[in-house]
Length: 396
Image 1 (tube, one colour):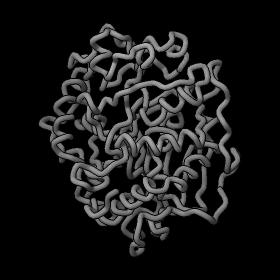
Image 2 (image 1 turned 90 degrees about the vertical axis):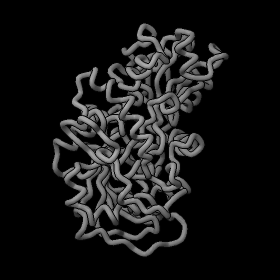
Image 3 (image 1 turned 90 degrees about the horizontal axis):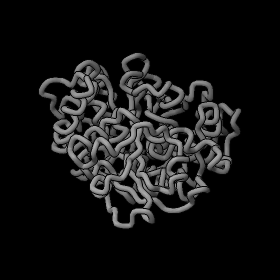
Image 4 (image 1 turned 30 degrees about the horizontal axis):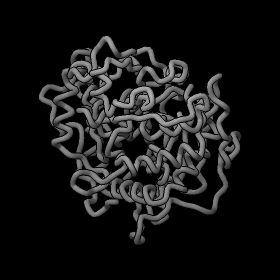
């Protein structure tokens, strides 16, 4: 799991006004009304796909965080009549293809973060046999490749939203992370993050300028007038700091960590290696459905965002999380603008570039070994990712 932002950023605090209440399902609702929007379309109608018999009756996927636009392409697959378990933070409903056809099985999306005591998706996957998939970032797959291997069958996001941000008014000459390092600007981040160990070991940042005590609270950034830089998600924090955190109320500048050597695939759909054999027939049908749903969300995010907002309204506050329409719309637009949600290098949505994965293995392995993780000896890209199940004709 990637440390994104604390629930404190979105919760009401002494620095922020209350977030706008999300319109839609009430917090006590467990079954949103049926009718209206379904899973959306991705262009010309495709022949209906039946997953029944090849896939589990309910396909369970463990995400890395609470529902948000970065997960919209997944929630896009949930059809009308879905149910929300507000105590467990689950959303379960018919799995629809991009043309609005019921595939004959259900999809259950389990929220990560607070509902899972902030455990990593790999840990949760290996601790619960009912879970078929988990969101496993490529660096996490490398970290656990020795003892808890996973193979990603679809990339989720082409680019990791993780970034470092700074105040452009305080530092008008800073253009990126390298400049932050040269100027010795303090950088706040969640302690233990491997990308930060990479940035310091590579010399882009110095160890004495990074502060791992950050817990997501915006107060420090605000009260010191942006004198320190800070980690965040490019698809969220710039909007929040300008529009939600009223005591800041202005732009921040940022650069993605993927642009300085930690080129991670985010929110990849991964499974245990043995499932590639056990569910081969399922994956051959399922992955193109996910690809087409991703294209549908990119073109029209309304349905996916509606499910996200209904879920967050129903159970978000119980887990210290609030999310609004404006943040969802910004997240969707920014993912497209910044290339977070995009075709792979080969032009196919959801694909992995082996050379890029190999480069991350090279950069990440010494970092994780220094942290005490057991990285598989002679780890190769094909050990942790595969393009086997992708339909190369599906693209943005």
